[in-house]
Length: 225
Image (cartoon, rainbow, N blue to C red; front, side):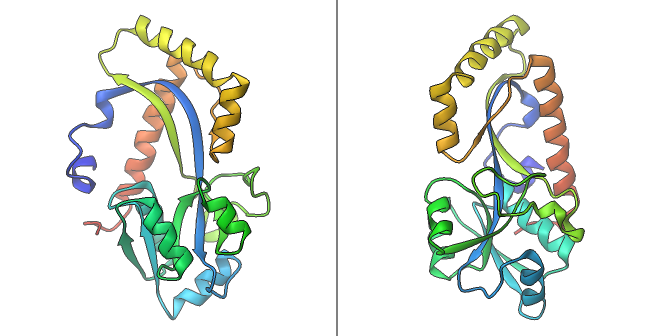
């Protein structure tokens, strides 16, 4: 799937192993402020007769896969609008040129939501975000059960890295990540510090993540555009 969605990528997930997980960031369903909706149900009802466009940070990106999956589960006709970066995407969403996007609550986004320049209708994790407790999990909607996706930051090493080296990296990173200054910086960025995991736990987590996103990609209509 990697070579199909992102031809420029010259490696596969299996070429690497995860030595440390640093932070995880859920994505929010964001819509332009002029859209006359405040809930996912309202969005679905509004879009059924009109269609919808959704922006992403590129073909094959997590935000693209989430948009396509949302379209498939709700039966909405949605036009994908790929961007080369998140800054232009958010600017177009706030400017009303884009209907919706799945995007992290980071950078300028939290302030834009609080100012009413864009609206957040749902979050892609099982529980509400501590930063926006009034935004419900998307998976609470009957059509979107199990709609749990996020982005994460980790330290990866080549698959052939000796176990002893991975253990040392893992232990050193655990000390850094759990330090109070680093935790505060991670939280200030809109992410959530990841709990420490052993190399064995990380292997299971990484394998499960690869399969989860491969399954999501396999469920979609191909080729993606």
